Amino acid sequence: MLHKNKKSYMMLVMLLIVAVALAACGGGKKDEAGKGTTDTGTGAALSGTIEIDGSSTVFPLTEAAAEEFGKENAGVRVSVGTAGTGGGFKRFVKGEIAMSNASRPIKDKEAEEAKAAGIDYKELEVAYDGLSIVVNKENTWVDKLTLDELKKIYGPEATAKTWADVRAGWPAEPIKIYSPGSEHGTFDYFTEVINGKAQESRNDKQITFAADTNSIVSGVEGDKASIGYFGFSFYEENQDKLKLVPIDNGTAVVSPSAETIKDNSYSPLSRPLYVYLNTKALEKPEVKAFTEYYLKNVANFAQEVGFIALPQEKYDEQIASLNK
Amino acid sequence: MSILQDANREQISRRRKIDWILHILFIAATAVGILALMALLVNIMMDGLSRLSPDLFTNYPSRMASKAGLKSAIVGSIYMVLIMTPISFILGVGAAIYLEEYANKNWLTRLIQLNISTLAGVPSIVYGILGLTIFVRGMHLERSLLSGALTMTLLVLPIIIVSAQEALRAVPRQRRDASFALGATRWQTVSGSVLPSAMPGIMTGVILALSRAIGETAPLVMIGALTFVAFLPNGIMDSFTVMPIQIFNWISRPQEAFHELAAAGIILLLGLLLIMNFAAILLRNKYSKNL
Image (cartoon, rainbow over all chains, first blue to last red; front, side, top):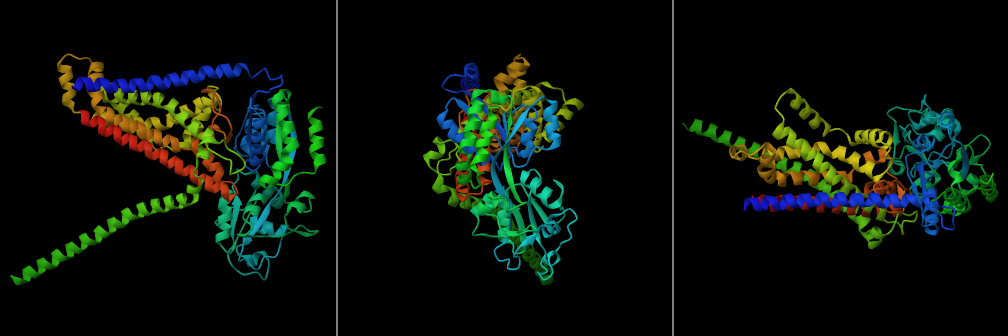
């Protein structure tokens, strides 16, 4: 009896192992077959794989392009990751990916690494975003903020402990400050514009760095004396929960909106979003087709996912530049 | 005499009071855990139930929440577990058999033992860094299903080894002695006598370890599992995504509809974990009855 039972489940285990091993091997063979067709993409039907990684801010745009492009070109497998702008560039300069999403321009150091690895690239602007400064709905005192006042709140030598320190006459309530974490391109851009140097920021008990932008939304929503910033799309989706702060940039007082971001009057906190393209990858027909498709349609996608499209002639120029 | 009795009564009532207070305290301790879990479940159910539809299984990810689904993520998760299972079973149980049945108990095996126990507590992201260095960059497996599955194998190995060792240790000494007395070799003893009675315990450990791997995100993000994958992997060298990664991406989006979708994904993942844990219990009950 014992003998029989022992055998029966040793068999069960063996079967399980064999089945899975077979499944894995079978998969491997199919993969080789798939690779064979990869290089023959010159015909009418395109095929191949395009790997993209980088900024999570730009991700919804590239995702939209990949989704729609995939419907028309079932043979091309486009995958998009969200390693962050810096994480994306790390892979891009090694030549591991064809395209990198970026919410800031490439840094000198990254450009040097690319050069050292023999990688040429093109920088494409795909949309605009406006960094939006928000405070709590019940905050009655903030009517606008100047760039200097923002530096008092976010700068590395920030002195403002309470709102009264930001501007005389405001209540002496301690400020609760929220900022995107240092892995975000949004943080890079904001610190460069406001504090003068990327990655230089206040870092004490009063500031909270958030990896997830939604936690900034709920943080500011829940505390009367709080302030935070993020991309415009997050404000658009949470308009009823937050109060948008107009920015005094020295020449005018401007609130971010589709118009002010597009005509650049919401300077300096409106920023372009980029896609970096490996020039060598562009020689592949599927990558070229995808890039053209992206630039032709991104204006529509931008609207759908909460960004602001560039003027049409900017897209046309960039499409023309692909063929040079 | 009556003074003594009074003193005794007082002492008894004090001890009863302490007993009663502690009783309440322990109930409260249990309730905190259960209430937190219930609050989480109710919260997720309210957000996600309305989004739980067949579309979630059949649609690929999309920029539009109404069209987005988990198809590639579900398939990715299942493939990953299918690749992991045989590798982690063979390596984990093999190591446990060596340590329990073959190795001499000396300082070296004690050192190995200590290392394995420590590894079981290492944060999962560290395994991600290890996987990135060894499998993705070192062995040039790229960001493939295979890299992901191997990284996850590293993550669950210590858990499997420790639980398999415990299962082997629970087999009575006499069984081995009887087998040796009949002239059996070590392997005959292990395969014929020890493993069969330890198998329910080993299987339970393996399944629980695998269900940990299914819910794990950090190491896969580290090795670069991707977020938008609108195709199914054709083989073990294809890029892939898994359920927790897709859920994480949905949660971090601005649109409310994606948060509901994420909640639906979490319900699905919880359901899967529940089924796996249930399977572990069933297996244990079935095979421990046969012994």
